[in-house]
Amino acid sequence: MPIVAPSARRILALATVAALVAGLAACVTAPPPGAVRAPQPLKAVDAERLWSGRWREVARLPMKITDGCVAGASIYDFTAPDRVSVRDTCQVGTPEGREKAIDGSGRILDPGTNAKLRVKYFWGFITWDYWVLDRAEDYSWFISADPTFDRLFIYTRDVPSADQLSRLTQRAGELGYDVDRLEFPSQPAR
Image (cartoon, rainbow, N blue to C red):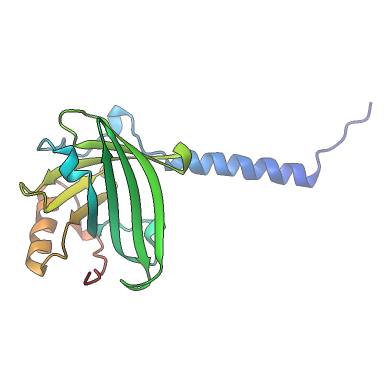
């Protein structure tokens, strides 16, 4: 029986699948315990207050997914007892530009404290953990990071003043984050 070499198409298809699986595996960010570098959350969170409504992303670490994006926001919809629907958005080019969005399904990892959220995007192929490192008593802002401290986000309900943004950036630095790496998206007036 002759040996038939695999077709170029089959090799290309297998290589594409392997690259896709490797790429998706690299996106999963639920780290093993030894990779955790972020500080533990400081305060318990009222899940209905924090994980509900629209939050403006006023500072973040540059990421490939946000290239060209300004005016980022996250919209949360808390559903008891521990589920949160997530819609992360940004405007492309200008604060009034075309919306770019990604939807996810979140689960609170620490019921009772409610400060750790795991969100699965793209049918669970990409998983990100978000820890609320600090927040305002009146829930007007919060600082969130992933456990490895590779990503950090500062959120506010309203457009912050320059002074408030400076204080929040300083607070992120006090928590141990390298704030020189942050970018500050433009904010729409609305």
